[in-house]
Image 1 (cartoon, rainbow, N blue to C red):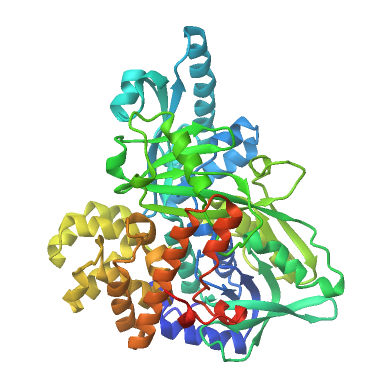
Image 2 (cartoon, rainbow, N blue to C red):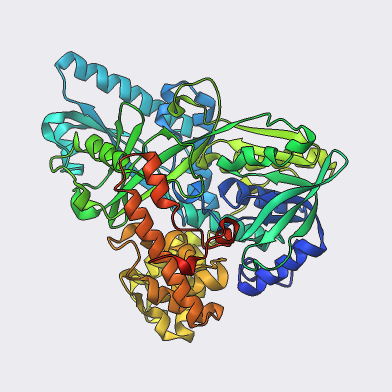
Length: 599
């Protein structure tokens, strides 16, 4: 629990000083719950446990949301295809969570986005059938979300003629459609939501430490009583033990690794997780003319075309992945598949020259008998392979809070604690309190602080009511109002704030996750790297050598990703991508020195 004399904001700052203190806590204290994994499920579990009054720690080997949780389609949605597969409870659960996030928990991060379901051109009888079939599905989607009440958070669907559909989305090829149905889902910056979850957990007293890799479990007899951790920011420091009454592993596609760490005592996995690769393309808004997104059926997956600020996100693929899980690579085949699919409905076909960014993520799917990952369940499971260790796996981003509550319920029963039941459905994240009023008063805020209304709107949509702290930084140092080189939609203040309050330790953390410069610019952030490193260096005390090393690593990472995206298949793309080691100490694990790499 936090000190009541400390404000919620101050208690939730993930500053460099806070990291030193939290590392000390890891070494010195015993925790009720230790969470492994800083993705959406792990951060959600840490928040759930801390909100119940438990003593909580979270450790993450890389950065918050460094894996799957920063590489999604950026949607908070129920999943129309799950409705078609009759997974009705999953759809209802997800739509309930969508309503909570968009109205109460994170309205500054989750907002409605209109999406069109194009109806294919066909003979009159087929057109009637298509409109009835898809219309019934979208109507059921709205019904599961709740037809009435502000808690649904999204407008209702509407049927459109062909002319109406092309008025909303002029780039639709007229001869390919007979009309469309417009519905709404939620859009989110997935990585920023995870950071807010972790910071909110920290504001309630949780110790949150990134670049802290779990290398083994601490056992007494046949019970897990903690973990061994390596601080990857201090590679020469010895490993240390963290003691906990219950360990929760929320490690996504790395879930099987947790059980393997206990193989010496004959522990069997109990559940298996398969990794499904999803690739997304980012193209400029000018490449497609439309005021809504699209959802399209493809032979192997569902394809989304989603507006994303001044860009479009196009995705996703759905293929099995058995190679490097830390850095899944998109191949030329993946890119060509997405372009081919989206070009079936566009009047001006997209080419590789239109692509600004590409990213690939891995979905953790509970393994079953299905031949393809697209048929595997998005259900989640909680499993206890050994006394004191709980694994939570599967599920989907939208239902992170349900997964977190389920695993912490199990932990509370095991602890025999008198903790309160989960209350995260009532707990706004940092930046959410007072958001509606802050948005209403944005013009006044801009005048008071001497900035444009556009700057305030940009900050409110990323930081909510925490915007006042960034504006205060700008007042104290007007240089922080400068747009970032190569990415003028972002301010220098956002880079400094990421380092001072959001736990960013490396240049890649800022350009890839705290901002989206790595996928929103044609240069993939290379033109912004030096300026961002200068700002981060001033905040974190980097000397010239560290700044240069951070920039070199980032440039090498981008070069490797570009090369992988020209490779014909997964195997060659993976080989190209893993040529550059991870900036966080993993290089030492592989015996590779970054400075010896020919950049």
